[in-house]
Image (cartoon, rainbow, N blue to C red; front, side):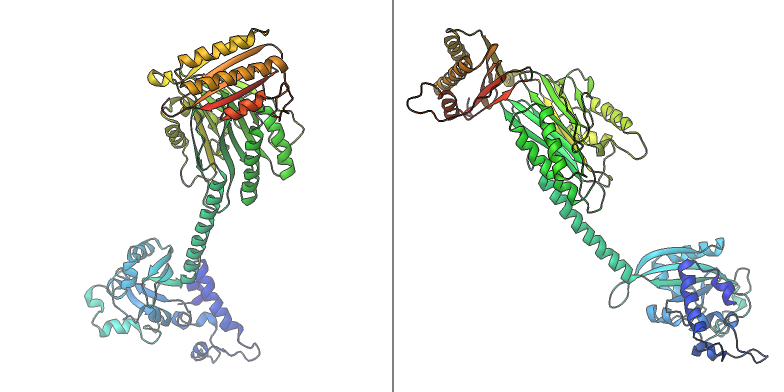
Length: 585
């Protein structure tokens, strides 16, 4: 067979391998001498005119015998062996020419290559199977097999590892035209099977995959360690969250969420997303999450918390921006107050199933600076459910993000059950799987409608104080009556009345009207709160023995489990304290 015509049939890699071998032999010939340096080529007989044979005049076996990759040539519909080079014999053992492949090439049969060889013969197009494992000693090897259709017309050349004529071999074995094969149409069609050893590449790829898996596991562990290990569970809310890392690479994302109890029954809920991926994004996320928890302790309005975060984000990394939504739930108000820094809208489903987007107001992402954020509110009464989420849940490359939010809104309208169940249902509805290409964080909160015995454990009572000398006695009498009706133990009753008296006295002395006393009980705590119109927050100080005032807050801080103060949205302040209830109460 002519080398140029034969090699043109080989696909890319195999053609380059054979050509490189031929070029190496050709390039080693000194032009002036016109001699072939390769012994296999140099030993080839000259043409009748006495000139040295060129590369085109070489037989196939002269070239394939030098190829370091295993090669076998088969002929006919039953793929009888026509040629096996030395490399194939070394890799898989000697093979007898003229024997059908099914009997003589078990390694190819086990790999399922015979049907592929049939297809190659019929279609005349080469086919390749990549990185197939072949048992060998001392270890398993991997080969990529390419089956190329060839024509074996005329002289078959020297077969059997380059030393035997395969046609003569058939005749000596009695397998000539009498068996009905040699003379049939299609015997001149053959298949050249080229095996490239890719064991090193496969093992390197496996080591790389194992290394990437370890790095990804470490990255996900880092990401999860920066998230809350256990969500705080407020008295008045049921809360659940989920985090799904995106993609399969080691880079971590910057998605985070948090639940922070603020005291007096109020709860802050946070979700955010640092743009980009990698350790830097995770580091920025960790700093922002820590800062949010610190700012939340100041009990500031949502927009003021975001204002502080905006400045901090610019200081951490001016090139890194993040989106964030900060919301506060107050069970006494029945609303969800929130502020958004470029984040996706909170979805709220009312008790009747109506879903509302909390879209306004919103500001630019954190780290951009120069923007005054504002707070908004959305009704959130008993029976309501809300979901906060990051863009990985709704953003797709082939669709507008508003379409994703609309899909989530539709899925959320029909997602019922506990917050944990809702998280799972929303992920399934939005098609979030383990191979999703972006991080996803979801935070679901419910304000359950309590009935029966549960309803008996949650009560509110309030008294407006008009000022004057009778305000303090009225407050003590009101607190005593309420705590008695709630059947608290005598010790807790007396401590509650004392705390209410001190808070009211402090408000009468330092505050301005309107003033109000509010008592609230849950299944875990008693909350006493006094509001007035003055914005100056009280602080605890050490009173000297001769001082006639300044001991009220110290007394409250001593007898209560915790206490605090905050400015109210309409102007003024609220001062509160909590008492933990005995488990049997």
